[in-house]
Length: 563
Image (cartoon, rainbow, N blue to C red; front, side, top):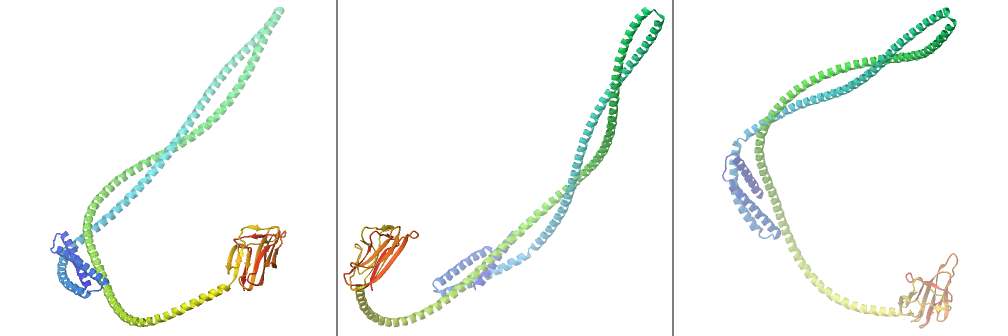
């Protein structure tokens, strides 16, 4: 019943969502506010139902009357929901009659156009990317050509500088060669003059000889002497000229060798210059090729720029058209999104109501189950109470019988306790036992010059009070047979001897003798003695001996008890 009510409420919510959609399209509807108020009324009814369920859980009282009230309210709500269903049917018919299908078709057409534009834009962007890649490759090629051209220019400048340097050296060599040739000419002219003078002198000599043959002897001798003197002077000048001629000849030979070297170097320089000229021609040819290729790349770049501008204009136009389409698509998408949002809200509300319906059904079932369980448990409890009352009566009868028996047992227990106390008193009077130890800690007792009674001041047990810790003597409180033991510990370079006395008579003793390899020993002994009341038993340390006392471990003890 409640599930049906909640389904009808979901129909109300769907009707409200459909009315909102029709309001967006410009067709107002009447009665939606009344549906919302009825929805709030339904929520109040559900809250009342939840309160009723809580009341069922807490007390389980008057739930039949509450169920009747719920049925009456449910009948009223069923009538209201039927009215809401009728309105919802009308709203659904009006919604189906709207232009929603035409809008969907228009939206699909716009989406298709947008996808086509996106494909065209992607193709144009791909072409633009390819053009940009070609342009980048041309720029890289131009950059490489420019680098090679710069390198070639640098090499040409270096070759020009080298050629200029070689030309300077050739000019210097030519000037030196011209100076040598002028010096050779001067030397040849001087040599010719000298040879002319020599010929003149020979002529003079011949004339002198002829005159000598024809002249006076005295005058001739004088003249001969003069001529000889002149001849000697001429020979000296001739020798000097000869040496100078030899020097000039050697200089001429040197100049010839230098000239030959300069000629060889000039030939080598001319060969190198020819090679450089050939290289420069090749470089100029390559530069011309580079310039032509560069012009071609510039023309291609201009064409690419023009094509790129056209592509950008087309892309811009496509972007503008795409923007318009996108705005139209977005407006339609906003409208569709609003419709979807409202539908989603309606679906969520319906789902929430269904969930609440399930929860209420579950909780109501649980309440009914709990009520049934509570009734069953109440019946069982009542039956158990009756059984317990019967058992209680039986137990009261048994309790009265048990109380009387308990009183009898208490009387017998008191008698038994008195008897036990009497036995304990009797037994404790007959028990005699003691166990004592030396109370000194970590120290030697002795040695003494005379035999001395050991006073065991640390009392471990003293049943019957026969041991006197101040004197170190046990006095038998009863006649009987007694067992005594004594233990001692000795360390160091002295011996330890103990003696157990009964009255003034030595019974048993212990002896510990130190050796070089063993300075520590333990001693023990015991005896069973028949004693009369008042007999005394004690332990004495022999003269010039000692024992080691350790109260924490009780190494030296004296024990006795009545058998």
